[in-house]
Length: 372
Image (cartoon, rainbow, N blue to C red; front, top):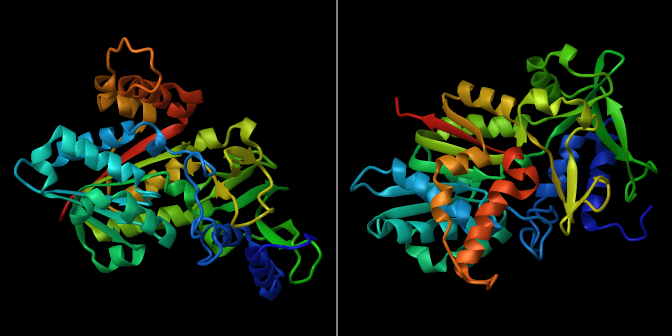
């Protein structure tokens, strides 16, 4: 037992103690760890992204991805028409700032008619977005997910989400003796207030069992843990109901299901990030560290087609950037100063294209929804 468990540990322990099985599905544990209104990781008022946080995103790398997204949006905008962009899960607002700055530079005549809507569940991040985007305040709207649904249907030239799907809570399942089992979280010492959690493998929940209907048991090695994310697929379905016309661009790390089932991933892809270190002890310090799993793009693409989207592109981040013209951003420079703007921009381009294989792990899924 921890000497002084954090408030969220106590909150989770109480939920476990009240549950009929004295255990809650791992999916519910992860949801509380990330989104409990007061103590959840993404809801707390502390840095998560960047040097002072726990991880980096492409929004932190020199504004390159923001410019590529701005170019995509401008391609989709008809001449003389306003440009409407929406971003889900915009974090600090850094990506939005990069996009708007790029539009101002690439097509200044478009900027005045641009509206940029951020959809964000975290009050902390909504505050940061207002501060970051103050120079563009007249054209920026910051909504909660509830507001997005209330204001539907929507027409946008471009809606995008950068590393949103990997933040949805997942079910963890395994096949043992030819039977599917699901990960539950119990109290190690069997009493509320315990700071120690233990994993139990029990009969799958209805949500997990439904998600498994699209899986072939013959494809899953005995003893291999896999993650299911019906919540992400549910978000895609919601977008199909609320976006009447527009392109939806999803950027995230993940893979096709056949790759996620590879032998080297016997323990699944669940990871913990804290101070830029990857850890495996998900049961410690809930709310203080990020929990994430690779996106199953096979499931996401299936959900998108069921929701009425046409799949226009599925590519690696590297392929997407090259097709979008990322090499146009490179500059010839004779400066030896590593902080010179041209040097920093060239370094950012190389990092997005070559950084530790991440440009291959990150995928881009472009979906299109047309008005009936």
